[in-house]
Image (tube, rainbow, N blue to C red):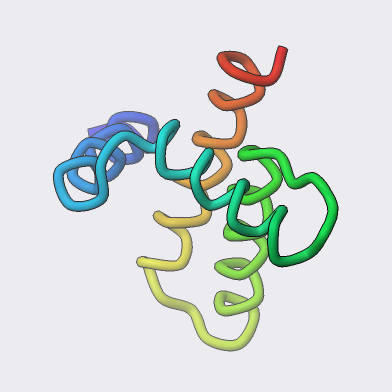
Length: 85
């Protein structure tokens, strides 16, 4: 299984638990916007989650950090293409 296939598999598994990522990251962006008082894009939410995973990886290597980091970056790329263009 390639890295890209593994990422897609993880995204599919997450969707079963958390729903469609487009809807999820849109909801999170609206909640963060309300909390912070300035507009946050869904892809920015995903970028920030990727930064969180990168910070964790810097502290201690775990395969989960790398898999999630790649997943969040893939989500960010897709959000920028589909709902933010």
